[in-house]
Image (cartoon, rainbow over all chains, first blue to last red; front, side, top):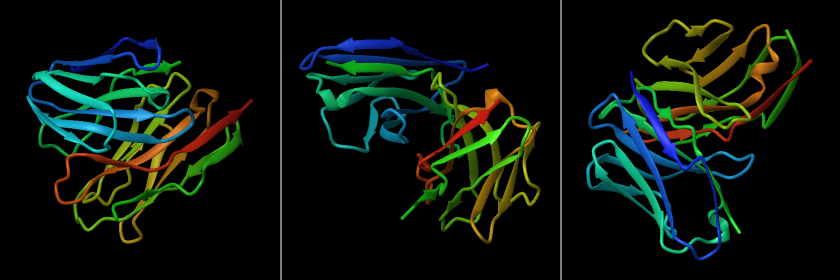
Length: 113
Length: 115
């Protein structure tokens, strides 16, 4: 069966510090991968998605970036965090080329102080 | 615009009651998937139910069922015999048109089940 992992689960970082959030998927090959952000009590904002290694589509211009160094690994990064980067970050995956179910990881709660 | 609309920001019912959450959407496609996700206080996004648009029969998963009206582009979620554990944010979603490899989500409905 497929599983999706995210770490860390919780992160508190000072403004201006770098960020690296990691997401990995097990039990499937060549998945489509997604990064979402969610403010408290709000809906989901799609940040990036990837349909293959090295292929990244950006939905929202900001100081975040994403990379996919391996087939089942998706990384969200920032060189300098802003207060507005605080939120709940969710990684998700879907079978490649499919319009079927999207499965989500447990999420990372990021607080920028 | 490819939109999904949930017109009820918040709802509250008593335990054991039946509640219906509404969702409407627009699309130019004839075949597509629709989804309801649940996000409890843990914030884990959990698939509740999905519907394939070409199937006329409404999807059912235990106490959860949908009322899918394709012509009206309506996709409501009915929760029967509601339980305290059903308290959560509920999001309606569908895939974007023209093979877009990304989901379009509604704004969410915060459902509270009271004891």
